[in-house]
Image (cartoon, rainbow, N blue to C red; front, side, top):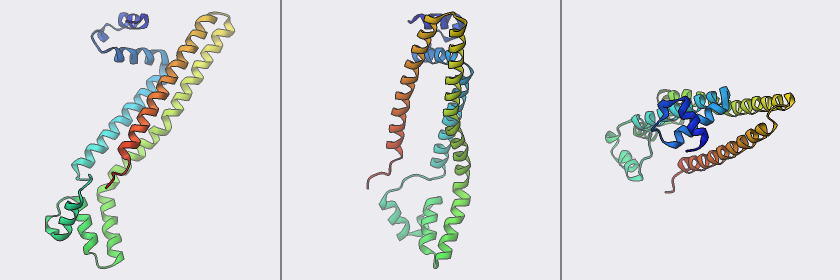
Length: 191
């Protein structure tokens, strides 16, 4: 156990028995101050929105379908159950381009608008997170320069700066891994 972890456990005994990564996350959050707490909050909101969108899409039947299923709906339109099959059958059976546009417009208004609202909120959070990170960086720099100007804790301040840089690099690597994984998950499936 690191000295920081021992200090954290002394301050918050309820953390005892939790995995080390949880204790480390609490330490980083405490060291990051209010900006880090805000970043955590935005992260939890984004995670909750993402899970809600994903579950909502699965519950509404908005998931990938096989070619055999699609061909089956087109051969036997009465077997089409759910929003996507009904959309496909309605679009194929439409006689004019206006009725196809109407079918897709109704689908968008009925099925996709709730997801669009949640995605707009998620976009706000995505834009807010880097600004909160910048806010934390600036407040940390101000605290560092204030300590240096007062002539106290020069070595401790430099140690804190180095520690902050290490945390920042670890966070950047983690974000990069998450972005690569998200790109793989959202890439169109090969037929």
